[in-house]
Image (cartoon, rainbow, N blue to C red):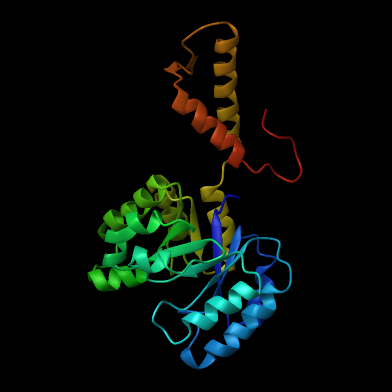
Length: 277
Protein backbone atom coordinates (compact mmCIF):
# COMPACT_ATOMS: atom_id res chain seq x y z
CA UNK A 1 0.00 0.00 0.00
CA UNK A 2 1.19 3.51 -0.81
CA UNK A 3 2.19 5.56 2.21
CA UNK A 4 -0.69 7.55 3.68
CA UNK A 5 1.03 10.54 5.23
CA UNK A 6 -2.01 12.77 4.87
CA UNK A 7 -5.64 11.71 4.53
CA UNK A 8 -8.00 14.62 3.88
CA UNK A 9 -11.61 14.66 5.06
CA UNK A 10 -13.99 16.44 2.68
CA UNK A 11 -17.70 16.98 3.47
CA UNK A 12 -19.90 15.01 1.11
CA UNK A 13 -22.35 17.88 0.78
CA UNK A 14 -19.73 20.27 -0.64
CA UNK A 15 -19.28 19.45 -4.37
CA UNK A 16 -16.80 22.28 -4.97
CA UNK A 17 -14.64 21.16 -2.06
CA UNK A 18 -14.73 17.61 -3.39
CA UNK A 19 -13.47 18.72 -6.79
CA UNK A 20 -10.74 20.86 -5.23
CA UNK A 21 -9.59 17.90 -3.15
CA UNK A 22 -8.33 16.22 -6.32
CA UNK A 23 -5.53 18.78 -6.57
CA UNK A 24 -4.43 19.33 -2.96
CA UNK A 25 -1.66 16.74 -2.71
CA UNK A 26 -3.14 14.54 0.01
CA UNK A 27 -2.13 10.89 -0.18
CA UNK A 28 -5.79 9.87 0.14
CA UNK A 29 -9.18 11.53 0.50
CA UNK A 30 -12.12 10.63 2.72
CA UNK A 31 -15.48 11.81 1.39
CA UNK A 32 -17.50 12.25 4.56
CA UNK A 33 -21.15 11.30 4.91
CA UNK A 34 -21.15 11.21 8.70
CA UNK A 35 -20.30 14.03 11.12
CA UNK A 36 -19.72 16.66 8.44
CA UNK A 37 -23.24 16.30 7.00
CA UNK A 38 -26.49 17.33 8.68
CA UNK A 39 -29.30 14.72 8.69
CA UNK A 40 -31.41 16.68 6.21
CA UNK A 41 -28.52 16.70 3.73
CA UNK A 42 -27.51 13.04 3.98
CA UNK A 43 -29.18 11.85 0.78
CA UNK A 44 -27.94 14.76 -1.32
CA UNK A 45 -24.43 14.25 0.04
CA UNK A 46 -24.57 10.58 -0.90
CA UNK A 47 -25.51 11.54 -4.45
CA UNK A 48 -22.59 13.99 -4.58
CA UNK A 49 -20.18 11.33 -3.39
CA UNK A 50 -21.41 8.76 -5.91
CA UNK A 51 -20.98 11.28 -8.73
CA UNK A 52 -17.46 12.11 -7.54
CA UNK A 53 -16.46 8.45 -7.34
CA UNK A 54 -17.44 7.88 -10.95
CA UNK A 55 -14.70 10.24 -12.10
CA UNK A 56 -11.13 8.89 -11.77
CA UNK A 57 -9.04 10.23 -8.90
CA UNK A 58 -5.25 10.61 -8.68
CA UNK A 59 -5.23 9.15 -5.15
CA UNK A 60 -7.23 6.52 -3.23
CA UNK A 61 -10.68 7.71 -2.21
CA UNK A 62 -12.51 6.38 0.83
CA UNK A 63 -16.01 7.16 2.05
CA UNK A 64 -16.82 7.63 5.71
CA UNK A 65 -20.27 6.13 5.90
CA UNK A 66 -22.75 6.61 8.70
CA UNK A 67 -22.29 4.18 11.54
CA UNK A 68 -23.88 0.86 12.31
CA UNK A 69 -27.45 1.24 13.51
CA UNK A 70 -28.07 4.58 11.81
CA UNK A 71 -30.85 5.05 9.24
CA UNK A 72 -28.33 5.68 6.45
CA UNK A 73 -25.76 2.92 6.98
CA UNK A 74 -26.93 0.38 4.39
CA UNK A 75 -27.57 2.84 1.58
CA UNK A 76 -24.27 4.60 2.24
CA UNK A 77 -22.27 1.39 2.01
CA UNK A 78 -24.05 0.02 -1.04
CA UNK A 79 -23.90 3.30 -2.95
CA UNK A 80 -20.18 3.72 -2.28
CA UNK A 81 -19.40 0.13 -3.20
CA UNK A 82 -21.37 0.28 -6.44
CA UNK A 83 -19.63 3.53 -7.37
CA UNK A 84 -16.19 1.95 -7.05
CA UNK A 85 -14.87 3.35 -3.77
CA UNK A 86 -11.34 2.32 -2.76
CA UNK A 87 -12.26 1.75 0.88
CA UNK A 88 -14.84 2.48 3.54
CA UNK A 89 -14.32 4.32 6.81
CA UNK A 90 -16.62 3.12 9.56
CA UNK A 91 -17.09 5.45 12.55
CA UNK A 92 -17.26 4.54 16.23
CA UNK A 93 -16.32 0.90 15.83
CA UNK A 94 -16.58 -1.05 19.09
CA UNK A 95 -17.39 -4.63 18.11
CA UNK A 96 -15.03 -6.79 16.05
CA UNK A 97 -17.76 -9.33 15.34
CA UNK A 98 -20.04 -6.68 13.83
CA UNK A 99 -17.20 -5.60 11.54
CA UNK A 100 -16.45 -9.17 10.49
CA UNK A 101 -20.10 -9.74 9.60
CA UNK A 102 -20.08 -6.92 7.04
CA UNK A 103 -18.13 -9.03 4.50
CA UNK A 104 -17.14 -5.98 2.50
CA UNK A 105 -15.53 -6.15 -0.93
CA UNK A 106 -13.12 -3.31 -0.21
CA UNK A 107 -10.72 -2.48 2.64
CA UNK A 108 -12.28 -1.14 5.81
CA UNK A 109 -10.82 1.59 7.99
CA UNK A 110 -12.15 1.33 11.52
CA UNK A 111 -12.43 4.50 13.56
CA UNK A 112 -11.56 4.09 17.23
CA UNK A 113 -13.45 6.90 18.98
CA UNK A 114 -14.83 5.52 22.23
CA UNK A 115 -13.51 3.79 25.35
CA UNK A 116 -15.05 0.51 24.21
CA UNK A 117 -13.41 0.95 20.83
CA UNK A 118 -10.01 1.45 22.43
CA UNK A 119 -10.43 -1.65 24.58
CA UNK A 120 -11.56 -3.70 21.56
CA UNK A 121 -8.92 -2.31 19.19
CA UNK A 122 -6.78 -5.49 19.12
CA UNK A 123 -9.77 -7.63 18.12
CA UNK A 124 -10.94 -5.06 15.57
CA UNK A 125 -7.50 -4.83 13.98
CA UNK A 126 -7.38 -8.62 13.71
CA UNK A 127 -10.50 -8.79 11.50
CA UNK A 128 -9.63 -9.78 7.91
CA UNK A 129 -10.36 -6.91 5.56
CA UNK A 130 -9.58 -4.20 8.08
CA UNK A 131 -6.85 -2.10 6.48
CA UNK A 132 -6.17 0.15 9.42
CA UNK A 133 -7.35 1.95 12.51
CA UNK A 134 -8.10 5.68 12.62
CA UNK A 135 -7.94 7.41 15.97
CA UNK A 136 -10.86 9.71 16.67
CA UNK A 137 -10.05 11.86 19.67
CA UNK A 138 -12.86 14.42 19.61
CA UNK A 139 -15.55 11.97 20.69
CA UNK A 140 -13.12 10.05 22.86
CA UNK A 141 -12.07 13.15 24.81
CA UNK A 142 -15.69 14.09 25.37
CA UNK A 143 -16.64 10.68 26.71
CA UNK A 144 -13.53 10.47 28.88
CA UNK A 145 -14.17 14.01 30.13
CA UNK A 146 -10.57 15.00 29.61
CA UNK A 147 -9.35 18.57 29.42
CA UNK A 148 -7.49 20.08 26.44
CA UNK A 149 -3.74 19.52 26.65
CA UNK A 150 -1.10 20.67 24.18
CA UNK A 151 0.71 17.33 24.27
CA UNK A 152 -2.50 15.23 24.42
CA UNK A 153 -1.30 13.71 27.69
CA UNK A 154 -4.79 12.56 28.79
CA UNK A 155 -5.16 10.62 25.54
CA UNK A 156 -1.68 9.12 25.19
CA UNK A 157 -2.72 5.74 26.57
CA UNK A 158 -5.60 5.48 24.09
CA UNK A 159 -3.50 6.70 21.17
CA UNK A 160 -0.76 4.21 21.98
CA UNK A 161 -3.36 1.45 22.26
CA UNK A 162 -4.56 2.21 18.73
CA UNK A 163 -1.01 2.12 17.37
CA UNK A 164 -0.17 -1.07 19.26
CA UNK A 165 -3.29 -2.88 18.04
CA UNK A 166 -2.76 -1.85 14.43
CA UNK A 167 0.94 -2.65 14.33
CA UNK A 168 0.44 -6.00 16.07
CA UNK A 169 -1.76 -7.13 13.19
CA UNK A 170 0.12 -5.48 10.33
CA UNK A 171 -2.48 -2.76 9.85
CA UNK A 172 -2.02 0.99 9.31
CA UNK A 173 -2.59 3.38 12.25
CA UNK A 174 -3.71 6.91 11.33
CA UNK A 175 -3.73 9.75 13.82
CA UNK A 176 -6.75 11.89 14.65
CA UNK A 177 -7.53 15.32 13.22
CA UNK A 178 -6.23 18.59 14.65
CA UNK A 179 -9.14 20.96 15.04
CA UNK A 180 -7.52 24.41 14.96
CA UNK A 181 -6.87 25.08 11.28
CA UNK A 182 -5.37 28.48 12.18
CA UNK A 183 -2.52 26.93 14.17
CA UNK A 184 0.04 25.40 11.80
CA UNK A 185 2.72 25.33 14.50
CA UNK A 186 0.51 23.35 16.85
CA UNK A 187 -0.48 21.05 14.02
CA UNK A 188 3.15 20.40 13.13
CA UNK A 189 3.95 19.62 16.77
CA UNK A 190 1.08 17.18 16.96
CA UNK A 191 2.24 15.50 13.75
CA UNK A 192 5.72 15.08 15.21
CA UNK A 193 4.23 13.64 18.38
CA UNK A 194 2.01 11.26 16.43
CA UNK A 195 4.90 9.99 14.35
CA UNK A 196 6.92 9.47 17.53
CA UNK A 197 4.06 7.34 18.90
CA UNK A 198 4.13 5.15 15.79
CA UNK A 199 1.30 6.51 13.66
CA UNK A 200 1.82 6.13 9.91
CA UNK A 201 0.01 9.32 8.93
CA UNK A 202 -2.46 12.00 9.92
CA UNK A 203 -6.09 12.63 9.06
CA UNK A 204 -6.56 16.29 8.19
CA UNK A 205 -9.50 18.65 7.75
CA UNK A 206 -8.00 21.63 5.91
CA UNK A 207 -5.94 22.00 2.72
CA UNK A 208 -3.32 23.95 4.64
CA UNK A 209 -2.58 20.91 6.80
CA UNK A 210 -1.76 18.57 3.91
CA UNK A 211 1.80 19.67 3.16
CA UNK A 212 2.68 19.82 6.85
CA UNK A 213 1.45 16.27 7.40
CA UNK A 214 3.30 15.05 4.31
CA UNK A 215 6.51 16.61 5.59
CA UNK A 216 6.10 15.26 9.12
CA UNK A 217 5.26 11.71 8.12
CA UNK A 218 7.37 11.51 5.00
CA UNK A 219 11.01 10.51 4.68
CA UNK A 220 13.33 13.48 4.33
CA UNK A 221 16.28 13.49 1.95
CA UNK A 222 18.64 13.42 4.94
CA UNK A 223 16.86 10.36 6.32
CA UNK A 224 17.09 8.66 2.92
CA UNK A 225 20.81 9.41 2.64
CA UNK A 226 21.41 8.09 6.15
CA UNK A 227 19.53 4.87 5.36
CA UNK A 228 21.45 4.41 2.11
CA UNK A 229 24.75 4.93 3.91
CA UNK A 230 23.87 2.37 6.56
CA UNK A 231 22.97 -0.19 3.90
CA UNK A 232 26.23 0.52 2.09
CA UNK A 233 28.18 -0.13 5.30
CA UNK A 234 26.25 -3.36 5.81
CA UNK A 235 26.83 -4.54 2.24
CA UNK A 236 30.54 -3.71 2.45
CA UNK A 237 30.94 -5.74 5.62
CA UNK A 238 29.12 -8.69 4.09
CA UNK A 239 31.22 -8.51 0.91
CA UNK A 240 34.40 -8.58 3.01
CA UNK A 241 33.19 -11.59 4.93
CA UNK A 242 32.89 -9.73 8.21
CA UNK A 243 30.22 -11.00 10.58
CA UNK A 244 29.95 -7.66 12.34
CA UNK A 245 29.20 -4.31 10.70
CA UNK A 246 29.16 -0.87 12.26
CA UNK A 247 27.81 2.48 11.16
CA UNK A 248 28.88 5.71 12.79
CA UNK A 249 30.33 3.71 15.64
CA UNK A 250 27.20 1.68 16.36
CA UNK A 251 26.65 -2.01 15.70
CA UNK A 252 24.36 -2.74 12.74
CA UNK A 253 21.80 -5.42 13.46
CA UNK A 254 19.30 -7.01 11.10
CA UNK A 255 16.50 -4.82 12.43
CA UNK A 256 18.50 -1.71 11.47
CA UNK A 257 18.92 -3.05 7.95
CA UNK A 258 15.21 -3.76 7.64
CA UNK A 259 14.37 -0.30 8.95
CA UNK A 260 16.75 1.33 6.47
CA UNK A 261 15.21 -0.60 3.59
CA UNK A 262 11.74 0.45 4.72
CA UNK A 263 12.90 4.06 4.90
CA UNK A 264 14.22 4.01 1.35
CA UNK A 265 11.08 2.27 0.11
CA UNK A 266 8.94 5.01 1.66
CA UNK A 267 11.08 7.89 0.41
CA UNK A 268 9.42 10.01 -2.25
CA UNK A 269 12.17 11.89 -4.10
CA UNK A 270 11.36 15.32 -5.52
CA UNK A 271 9.95 15.28 -9.03
CA UNK A 272 13.02 17.17 -10.18
CA UNK A 273 16.48 16.79 -8.77
CA UNK A 274 18.82 13.92 -7.96
CA UNK A 275 17.84 11.01 -5.79
CA UNK A 276 19.70 10.27 -2.62
CA UNK A 277 22.76 8.12 -3.27
